[in-house]
Image 1 (cartoon, rainbow, N blue to C red):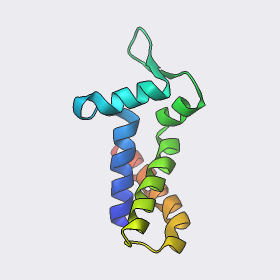
Image 2 (image 1 turned 30 degrees about the horizontal axis):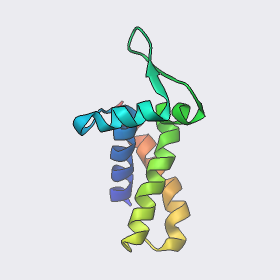
Image 3 (image 1 turned 90 degrees about the vertical axis):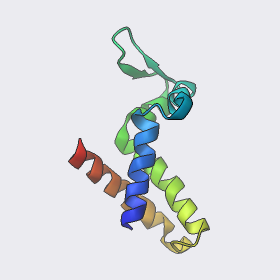
Image 4 (image 1 turned 180 degrees about the vertical axis):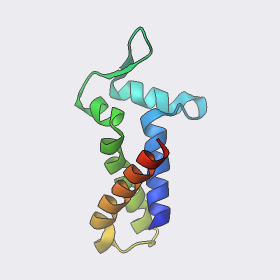
Length: 100
């Protein structure tokens, strides 16, 4: 479970705030509606981009991707995936609050 939590935290961190190689995550955020004002502060232009700018919200989506991948690779059983999503998201939030 620790691996799922750390993978969720890393993926969420990439999507939420990092540029990534060739600025791919910045481009993804822009595509989803995240913009910058004159002071380089991010703001949302729609509901989806609001979810990307909120670490807690985007950790649910990151945990969903990680847990589906883990279930496909048979790391966790499919019946445990829904609870694993919630647990991995919560764990990623705890890691973020501890490090932040």
